[in-house]
Length: 232
Image (cartoon, rainbow, N blue to C red; front, top):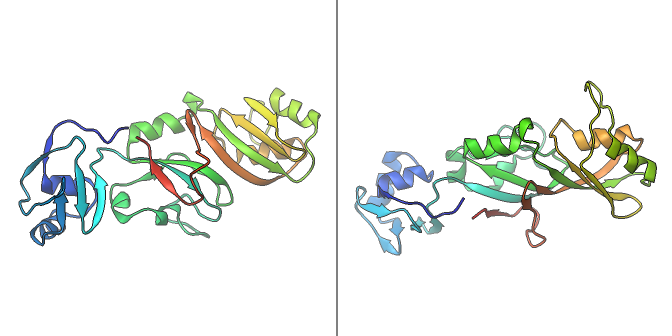
């Protein structure tokens, strides 16, 4: 997932691949002197550039060439993980338009009222790896509950609870008590509203839900709500 990429490519194809617009739009920007590559303004659309560590500046915005996008966000409350939201703003409104042109997608989804770690990519293989139920990618959440969390509730979550319309019990991978009303809960599936349904099944209710990890990716404490970073 590094920005380092081998090979060469013409400037016009580089701009198109990075989501800056159609061939005609990118050609116009080049002719107008709006494109810098490695610190130099280039007016030749067919000029070849090494892709490794290629630094671009398009209309004053700096970036590096990236063959694929891999992004981590600290999702804020009140956003839908959809390009066509129904009730809340789209989470994709927090990204620049060129990412959307590249068909950036959520790697799994979080409910509008759930916050925390959310991955994005335009790499279909990466998305499949982290969303396929067969891979059992662990996900960990901070769960704040309405009622006090008893030892019996934690034991039930670890032993497995039967959810509506499921054929077998669903077990938590790990449950850690953080306070009287908060736990850290790790799961290996990604079923619809799974954490909320599991907590409900043991007689409690989720008040706040915040995801802190997906597989090997851990949400940094320094990443503010609504902000995102590239995964290099």
